Image 1: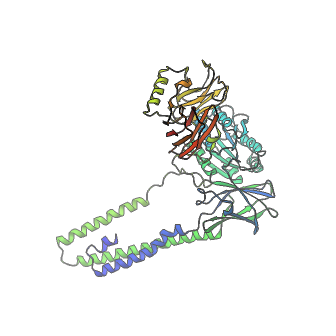
Image 2: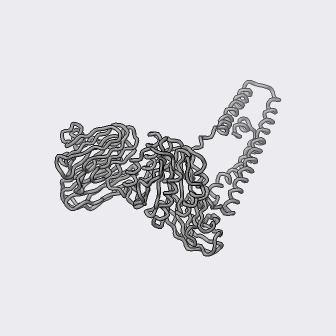
Image 3: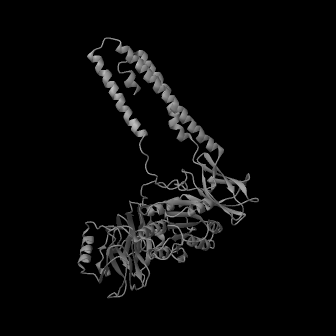
Length: 614
């Protein structure tokens, strides 16, 4: 910009001026740009401190931004209490030792749309928890009740959520009190309470009662709130956690953000070396740099939320950076004014000379160009900021307004449920798949064809006992879709996506007596004999959920799939029993040894996959 103003028809003196100004600007601008890279790393953030089990102290810590991908190594963290080092135990919150209670508002004023959004969000949350995590569900309409007791079996909680129906007065606070009391007796490990509320309770426990119960349970509480008062903010301020105020359309994303936050938090436990209250310093080492936070450990038997204070070094560094930016801005402004003064003087000296058409043209053009260049800068400065859709500071890593990507944590909840995850299925051009689809659509091989709309419970009487397969389609509206067998109690489908897939039925020797369907809109279930599924003797390429029969004699299966990073499960079953070959939420390419001879394979997947037997 200075070049266009000063050198368009400049002389050596102007050129020298521009060079000097540019050098000065670079000397100031480079430190400003490089400041974030040279600044101290983000300080660790303590979300909650619990002293109910004094002298044992537990705190929930959010790792600095540089830590989540590789996890927080035990030797990367150190704690001192009143200047004395203590031995710590570090456990990821999202681990198999997690105990979590979901409290769900089911008051009678809940519309079907709101309840479906909550069911979908709670399902999303559960499916992203690690294998072995214990879950319970509390319905808080009327008298709060435990509809799924604390259990490592995810199917219990998922089924209870899908069966929730509105009714009674709102009792979310009482439901949370009940959940905290149950969690207080849970096995040692991280504990969390996830609350959904759509309004204010007519009556219930006080903030103090809730705080005491959550403190005794040593739990972190996170609340998704679409309506209501600030009771939950008061509870969270005292115990630690977060309140996500949102609307119905963002409920699923809010549950996902909580799951993401849990994946970046750690439970740190240690023995306090003296009486409480006390002052503790938490240090986290990132590479060669340590970041520190000062924490006040409260009186015994209490909890505190968001008590971490950044170290003086970190605060001073940030203040120095802000001062540097302000001073740099003033220097750049002074340089810009100086450039305009020089340009005005030069223009005045040119104007004193004889006017000519040649001289007038560039001057006019330069003036217009400078004005045009200035407009975008003014527009950028005055641009209206985006709407504030970000969650509170307790969840700093959650996306502000974008939908949460549907990803699962390694070793996720999917792995804990046999036949749980289901995915969209779109058959390709493979002749075997086309033949399978045609026969199913025409009903030629179908033992039974069941159709319906919305929630239903249908009975099944197979023409012949023994294993079979079911071709299930439905959920065109992308709402909540679940299909569970009656009699054997197996979840065949739980998804939020349109579904078209094939699952095995009664392959473990049981006999299903019907299906329980949770759906919005039409659905179809076709019960097919094993003779209707496709066969292969070397290689098979498929997409989504499928069952196929291998007729060759190979003993090594080369498997690829799950490029979208969703859920991928491959099992083989036959005369030698059932073998789980693949179970992952990452893209997969590998070889697995299988029992020789003919057998069946069942695949649960999103997207395409290939199995080749050698």
